[in-house]
Image (cartoon, rainbow, N blue to C red; front, side):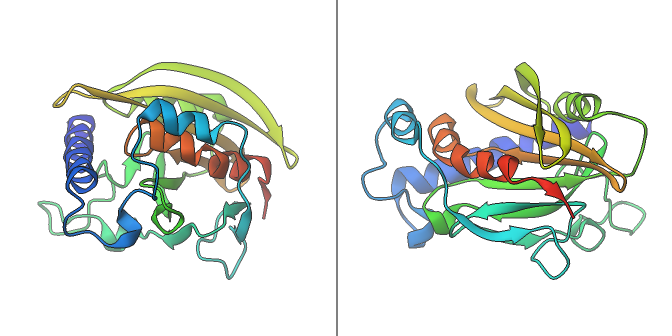
Length: 226
């Protein structure tokens, strides 16, 4: 049931963002595509190939916008915001916040931070999810994360090392059942003494996703424990 709700919500967001891009109405400058980026996904993807994101603020340490079990560099102009599921999740039938709502919980991890790309000119987020300590390795955590996303498929997994951490990453395709639209998404996971961490990159479409990949790779490359 939760997966179905999440799929429906993502479909609604997809339509809303598509309407913003298509009409250009009722938007701020930050919500509109960058000048010259209204071309096809393939054109946008080719522009992003080989680019490297400039580092902005470090995220994760005490006093940063989101305090995490790991730290990494955010891309220049991307705006991080801490997410408190216990305070922001919808109220359930019992009158308490439902922190298991699929907007805030996916598989074994809970959403704790969003890093918005709009100030940098893209439509999408890096989202950081954390979980409780356990025996599962990074691959197991990441597979459970993807399995909980209704509409995810064609997943390709690999391992990586960064900052003394061993992790797993995945590239997959998300398909909206309601609108039969597909787009690429990426995520990586590591485990720490304080629990697993998953960093996920979505985007309005595959073109936006590809343009934001340098910011995702920057986070992965600069990953370290706090």
